[in-house]
Length: 214
Image (cartoon, rainbow, N blue to C red; front, top):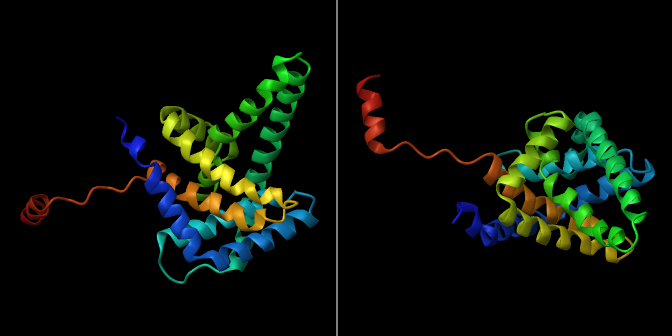
């Protein structure tokens, strides 16, 4: 069994615990980001997501000083790659769905799995753009390749995270301010585990040998 197959509950618990412990700063940052995205007609939404990812990852990694809600504005550093990511894939998905709807019967039925599939395979691209400063295309390819290699465990956790995050849309979209940070908290935990695996601590005997030959 793949190591990741048994990590679903761990990922969820750690992500939810991170969200609970830092609820106030995450929701306030999300409120700022949502307001700026709204007034900019969505142009700044990618930068705001990048800023929220920065906050979540800093909270996850610990250390001082702890991030504040206003740190979401640091997402402007990633404005262009996040804008390209949203535009290119948004347009591509729009064209694909438009073509599907032209196909009688089966076309509309395929719309949801295609949309969700794109969301799953590209889920970690924003994290790679922010954490590794990758361009949107390289980040997208890396996300697709990684999800494909660990499809079932990642499909499950991304599905749950998306459902929880999407619950906010039931309240005229306002609830997204509260639920979207939860999605990012869960995905941040998964991202760190999958893309940044902890290095094993050196064994005591190896430390002794290094001292002898140092």
